[in-house]
Length: 281
Image 1 (cartoon, rainbow, N blue to C red):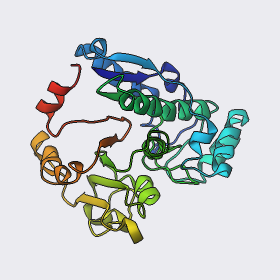
Image 2: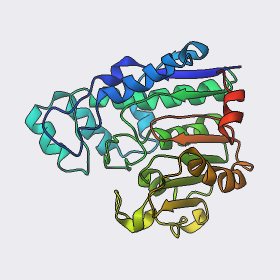
Image 3: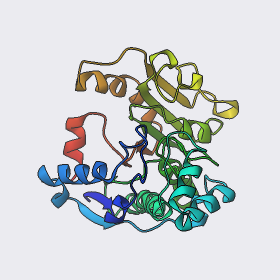
Image 4: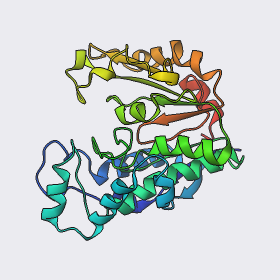
């Protein structure tokens, strides 16, 4: 078994249609550059390529409300002015006529990867997707994110493949509050995030991004936040430190890992050297 790479060029279709300095960084070139990097390093050729398919609205409903899904669906027929007005209702988000299609492809890619790994087609995989997902919530887009790709994948893995324990490792610079909110009372999903916090002065500026937010009800203890209050400058060893010291304690009792953000990896190893030896590359 090797490593899967799930991608679809249609996910580069959405782009900002008006001036917005906060959102202009979320552009098609982000995805194109990542794919080019894989090709330049010779990694794409060593993976099993899977073309992403759209997730169904039923699959989106594993996490999101039907009203929110319907709202995003309506953006396909909206004018530029209507899209801009809707975007202003959310924090750091823009909509495009192709947003619904692209966001469903992003979710679909993660679900295809779940199926490929859990049916033994591949050992692990990488879903290169856009838009990202870890900030989106049940009824709200947020922080460039429309549908919560990884949260839906976790729910899907539990429902379709019967998993009982899942670890989500979120290594984005921002806290993935959307994933945290969705699973904060669920003891079957352990959410682990290390992110830039700066005592709440870094986006998304949330008190619940701090270390003492550890879940609620039956899910207490299944949220692990490791916030950075000082901007790290030490390079890869600094980033690997939390992974080596905190997450192994958690992942030993979990069958599968989901790694966010913008990518989905299954059964990744603890260190880069081990990861490289386990993957197709």
